[in-house]
Image (cartoon, rainbow, N blue to C red):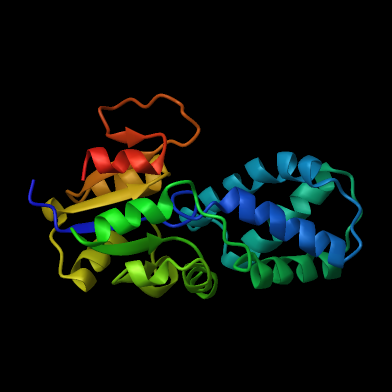
Length: 226
């Protein structure tokens, strides 16, 4: 394989979304005098958030609906009374403060330093435009990447082939000379495979993977393939 380009997902792949999200909620809960244990909240919130992101990828909810509904449903499940004004305040503050927390997955900077002298690297993300650029800048990831492709910029979300095609054209890359590395099987791996890109699935939970797809349980293992 004559690989020239590496495309990374950001959240849950390089940027430790769960850790940073929990820290953000701890801050805004304290700021707004919300007396909920963060461990109790994240247990309820995590699957709800995942559900709404799937609906968002499928264009079944809007960005505004996602931001509101995931919090409303989580608070309702916890039987915590929160009016709409509080929900909207928390929704906005969560986005405002999220990029202030910048824990990366173990080995992220090491593997990027290893790859940057061998390949051109880019980001393809379904995350919100205004937040993703701040995350990259504040976590010192921005200098590693040439093109930052967001779903809001393109108008479609992974796994839609149009976002991958857009990314290839913007990067002057060919699909058979490119790897996509991400944590989401549907959005990152199948989306990229469907236009002929090579893929690596990040399975940091350690669960076995099928379908004859290259997978890693930690970022340092990427060096075995690239």
